[in-house]
Image 1 (cartoon, rainbow, N blue to C red):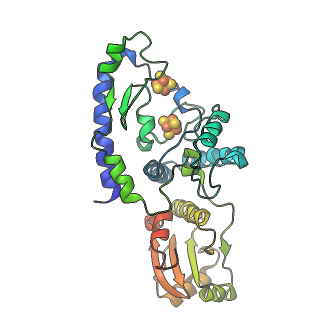
Image 2: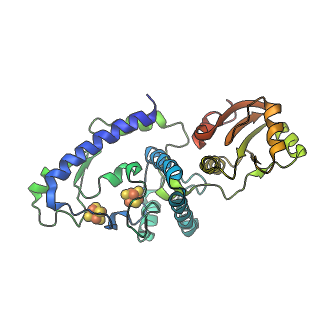
Image 3: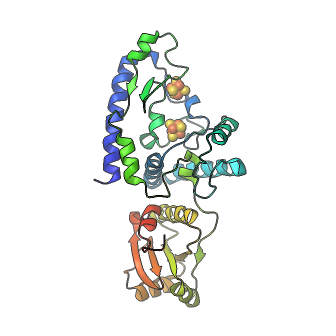
Length: 314
Ligand code: SF4
Ligand code: SF4
């Protein structure tokens, strides 16, 4: 079973438990759209949360591209605001293992709203894809062997016994941990923050191929990624963001762009030379000019490119 199917199972179980406890809590719970205190201030999320948010963002990009781009813009503005204060890898977004500097950073920026929060409506724009910890806001929770308090705005008139009765026991079988182990492939098992999950792209532009000479150089590269992009297609915009995410994580690998509208002849020449039928958006991984992998449309994700790099090059 792939991670998305297993994640759906995990979320279904968590949401069932939360619904039961929400019913029990009744008026002790005062959560509503526009009540945003729990969405202010950065916090750590894991690899599974990242993948879920990115999947949610891709879906939103197809449905409402402007809203999706607004999230990315807010996230990028936030990353610029954090700048060198970010306690971790500025490229991958992986948080430092030094808990004290991470806590100090969270404290310093505790006034900054989550980039996924729509500042006008006060609504979470990726509600069904939100991290596990966001799902638990409001209720008292038992998670990972710990009892966590409810939101300070909820259960204000409840007794300790009433609070305990409403405590949600989340993921007792440790499904999340098992999934994280499945996903861990060495470099992405670290924690990060939401701004990196939805805003990381590359400020380093892709190198454009605009002539036969440029194309020749690409075929001479030991390893190269070529992205065929249509500026008129919303799916291509989504794919472009994924390629940028890859570029951000692997700035050592040259990533080239062919504008299939403007440079049709180059686009055709690439198809002829590689033998890969033209599609757009499309990504082709070349190792010394030979095709190592290719994918099109929604197959073009940062993870897919990374996982399909030829062995011995990652
Ligand atoms: S958890 Fe607290 S801050 Fe968040 S919506 Fe509920 S009441 Fe409001
Ligand atoms: S992802 Fe959604 S629920 Fe979680 S902090 Fe951001 S806006 Fe709030």
